[in-house]
Image (cartoon, rainbow, N blue to C red):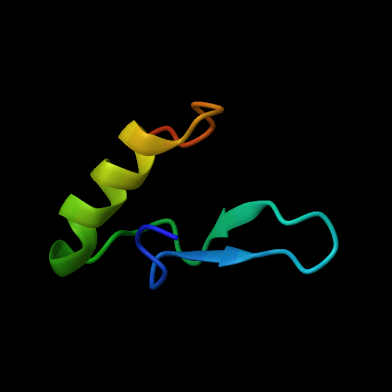
Length: 46
């Protein structure tokens, strides 16, 4: 998984959820990569 410190996987359905609404500066690039790489385009950065 890309950005494992920013997302957690649900054990039931396997969907990822953000750990926090605020992305730390040191995780910004990884979260952008995760959004770009998401095959469902389910990650939106505001």
